[in-house]
Image (tube, rainbow, N blue to C red; front, side, top):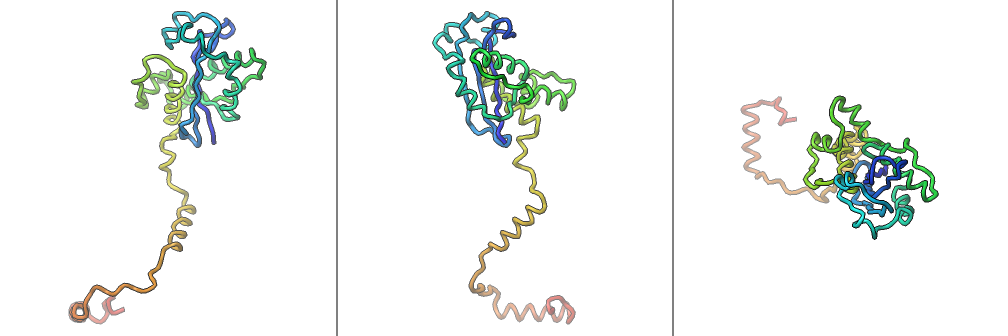
Length: 228
């Protein structure tokens, strides 16, 4: 099963107020394991970036001035997503921004039902705790040393680690095989075992065999299993 963990950084909180995406980061999982494939874009938002947002992600209008527009990367972005479920921390926020950008370029929206929200999983599994990405990383001992500022790709990678902890994905490779599979595998190994064309010569000497036989007869008697 293929899943995409993704995150965005933006100029503000509401696309309806004219705020835009300035970074997209994606991480690919297959069968709940990172494949190493990622996708990242810095985007020119075609507007100013409020100082409050700059303090969150550190991205300035000057840095983004020569970066691609969303319209230039939308095909590559959608191709990377494919039809995979989308793992997102606070999914409604990122989906509304992605859909606003898709609408601008005449593309259809991504349904919120396609998203797997790590906050919702955390609420079910860890009632009463704080659900910020930082807090969940600390709870699961996920390394936060690189996160001096928010970043879409870095946050997607951290979200992937938190997601795997929430669903027990890190232990999936340690699960025991079903009994029928294990038995079949054992039988196959037995069938595949190589047999020597000739038996090895015994290491025990004839004299040692005589001593052992005498011991059995004297100490254990005729009913000893050695005589069976």
